[in-house]
Image 1 (cartoon, rainbow, N blue to C red):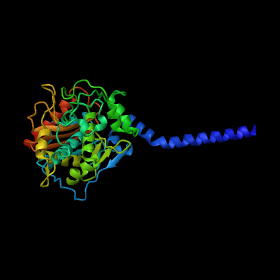
Image 2: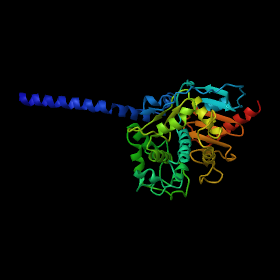
Image 3: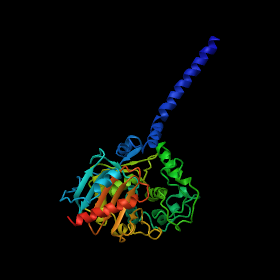
Image 4: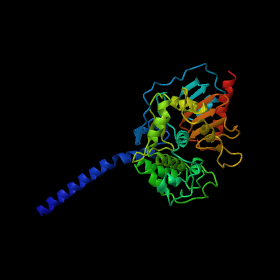
Length: 391
């Protein structure tokens, strides 16, 4: 009996030790899962959006060894009537307005500061578009008419088998992907849990097998298309997107702080929404785009790519918002003159070229999906432009 009890005790101890080891091994994954499930909680959302690296796997991007580029402050102008109410209603956390490359307005709200590296969400897509234009000019991507699988062969046999590079740039892959951020079991939220648990985004993408339309026939905003754009960039160059973006764009902008990307479990950047920068550094990128891809006398992004990517070339419905190569074009905009990068919960880089205006706005707007909210935001940006011209 003593031997039985002795061995039973040993087995019990082994089980406890094994359970403890598993607990430690899984602790980070559990922590990240808890983080993603509470990411948008009302009491945490503002803090979370400024501290994404505290809960998710991430990689910092080399800012280069150059000096911080100057963003001079100039004469301010009176913000339009209704601006303060818009800030409150839309839970805005920062706004910065550049007029002809000079800061005309800068403000931070809800406890955020100029040092916060705020999550871009889908504004990151526009950064990837700029990088892609450089890779096209360099010849790494031979043609936008090339099939996706030429550069991302792991997608052969799945829903992307017939899609071209142009299709995914324009969100016209035809792939079935539920992007309802408020539904727990939507594709976008399942993808978020893959990210939080350290899974592989490439495997998740290759596992998508259904389409709602032939590739290139219909436009539908589908964030996973942007991950495929990233796969193409990696396949064409044999390099990671963080390395490419740092070398070819961000290291040349004189950023105040290094950017960072959220990543999956094997270090692949969450290119469709995981870029984090300060408000001023978002403004530097926006000003470079306004200047047709040039910064401090250097042509960083090809001017013809900036022009092509910001035109409403995708097959959106008449009278609705336009879309280019990962850039939005507001209803009523003159093509090529007014466009924006846009992310969920109120992240924007708005550019009005004739007015020489860049507006960066970050937020924690839990009501961003309500009808008319996007129109309200664009209207405020246009009011800011008008105010800048009447000061």
